[in-house]
Length: 314
Ligand SMILES: C[S@@+](CC[C@H](N)C(=O)[O-])C[C@H]1O[C@@H](n2cnc3c(N)ncnc32)[C@H](O)[C@@H]1O
Image 1 (cartoon, rainbow, N blue to C red):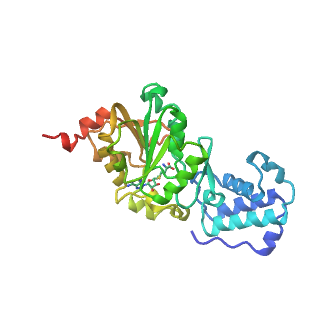
Image 2: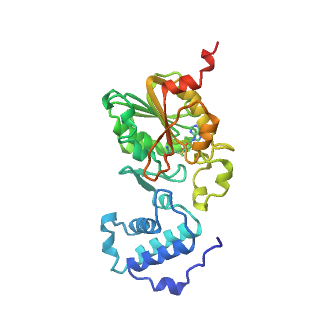
Image 3: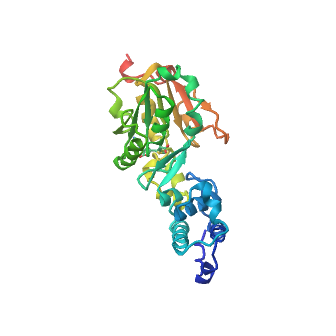
């Protein structure tokens, strides 16, 4: 899509109320072909979020500015945010420095992918039903933790557990550290800079290993909208086929689960590729509300049977 036309000073001068500014932003987002899906689902959700940031109004108080004129500071802050969203393609989450997942607010910036994992649907009920009673779940891992959002949701869901969270990116772990501290979970969420699970190999085994790894094949990344390319490439892409991190994870998790333990991995559009790559693994695809069912569950025994450990081979 060609670059959208820049609004003229006369057009901008006609914008008075919060409602004028929101309608203008929504039209501009649509004509510019802005892509959503980085924690926000529509033009309206993004423009309201940016309006909240510009005016300092909480989400539920935003209607107060729909009919009144914005003051100069509010209007210029809002138009500046809209400009950066449309003409620099900076995602809304980075512009406001935070996003929400599972009812929790997380600080974010360009060091981490913007949280939007399917695990937010699955951590409350679907995953615990495959595990012993909640209080007996004491060892949990979040592999590829990024902002730490899933590690924090896991720590809240499994209150007796210590969550070991890993990432290859030291910069991402700095953001995770901020979020873990904000939720006062530093004693129960431990961060490790490591390749997949390498740093956890010598520790005790896990009841649950969960991962939302990078899973886009390199070719798909090339075609992503510009705003997605503002996120760290390492958080999206994993090799030519998208399976790079998943390959390592399956091998490492096999040796690190308790006998009743489970591994759950979000794999995006790679379901068919997973079946082709590991025909002996009995993947169970967990149901998600949009029907993509892109999270697989494996038992420790499935991994031991289908991927015999090199150490155990005769
Ligand atoms: C899709 S993001 C997921 C972040 C977070 N769990 C979430 O759901 O928002 C993938 C993360 O994996 C990390 N990563 C990429 N390769 C890795 C590797 N080999 N070992 C550990 N982490 C890796 C990236 O830095 C990125 O933070």
